[in-house]
Image (cartoon, rainbow, N blue to C red; front, side, top):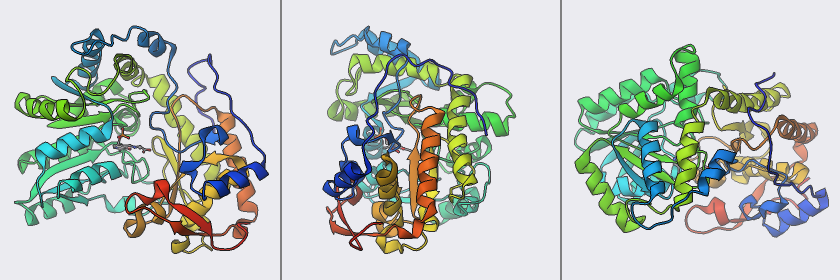
Length: 451
Ligand code: F0G
């Protein structure tokens, strides 16, 4: 498979250290087999997340120099606000320091105890913030998303039939319909314009607030442009059409903002915006910076222009499809079809000899680091405990950061693991905190040797 070459040249380097296998074995031991604890300088290819890890363009770096760090009404705020209005088509912009800050503020304004919010799938920080208010979060993905291996388009859709049924059952308690674009928890799969339109229409008919979590909206819009609109129209307009459907939308700029941090909430509702701003001042900072430095707002202002470039998106989605195709070719079980931002391995199938309670996903994460210094993340029983439906490992691709050789290297390491995969063993938890255990827990091997 081939994909368009990088639509940029490399000008600044961040060198990669390549360690020996015995070094990596030692590092794993001292990190108690938890990759979050491995220093980043000991990583060869870091596929932990696509969040905040994008390379900046020379234009972004140049614009950072224009950062106005005045506390209130800085020039950088004006540029940021104009860029966000241009990107979203919305009239009111509330800046925040990252996505979950937006979720916290929105939850506090819109949700009370026992209220119900519905989604194609809530990302974990969204769910945590909504549940923190005492609300109930119900994922309503379509049947087609349940079959991980079947390559159906738009597996990020919400099940509108089921949604209607649930709404008539929970009439009084229902408050929000939220579309996560793309659906990170469900494998980075996009939702179709048709489906998002239907979800918005249901929300409007039943007087619910319709929200889009827009952190990867450019990637989602690219899939709509490619498959639904058959390359007609333009991606920037699709994005604006999606925002136009919402009562509120928010975006972690760490993803499709092509920035290292930051975010925003948008709406056209002045009264709602005033309420959101009151909390934003309390939690984030003054309403013209929301916890961001002026230079950061400059980065995002420029990033929102760059992310809608068809050349950028074609290459970006092509990269993910490339890694996906090459891994599928050698027999790695994956979520199909390739989506945006990451490739998801079905580690339950890959390491079928390791039972769920011995964390096959984490065993693969550890194997990838041991054999090749690759950092990935488990999204399975270790992260989600009993709520986990499958044992996945996410290989998230940072934006504008890797080349094809990095992916070929990842494929080589998978080949090495595949040769004798039964030799890899599972893990037990040696220590865990009371919540979000995957970040800090310590693990130990179920057998003396892990291969
Ligand atoms: N919504 C989605 C769909 C996300 O993927 C994330 C973050 C957030 C909200 C929260 O944004 O990190 O700026 O507070 N996802 C990262 C990831 C952490 O690795 O997928 P944030």
